[in-house]
Image (cartoon, rainbow, N blue to C red):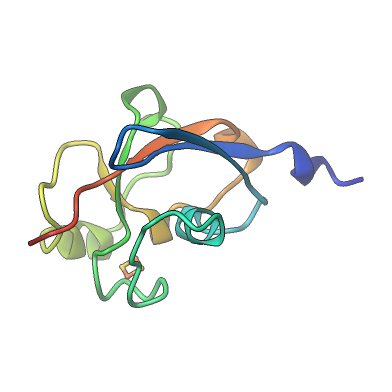
Length: 110
Ligand code: FES
């Protein structure tokens, strides 16, 4: 039994439903969300080229998620309805410290 099996994230979808998803350390949050079948496009597969993996990180978690890189910040400019707690979920790596992380799927552009 790996302790990783205990990890989870909590994702609110665009209808406001909350999903508790099992998470593995080292996985991108984007992969965890897609693996669970939630509607996140993530068109570029994590290459930081599409901005369609946009999520809002719950304010309580903002300090615990590692800061954005300049590249992520630039790519976020292309996302729809960007807020102060916007992140590209392919750039957040799951770790023990992020156990219970809460994010909300951002609306999709037009
Ligand atoms: S999946 Fe394309 S930027 Fe994250």
